[in-house]
Length: 88
Image (cartoon, rainbow, N blue to C red):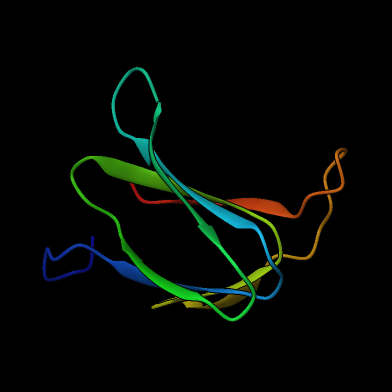
């Protein structure tokens, strides 16, 4: 949440085809509750909500937040770029 109590937005731009954006729930049992697949050049605006506490991004993407810009570029064991964004 931002200082004014409004949920924070992020902008995700796919740098390659097949970028997965996955929303994760809050609570004792973290679960996937929504997913999208973006192709190169597609942009998605996502929001942290009372239900969404984390967003997982798999694939090469540029993410813009109020804190700055992040680019996924590290490959995991399966060869995918992947990182999580959390909101407390």
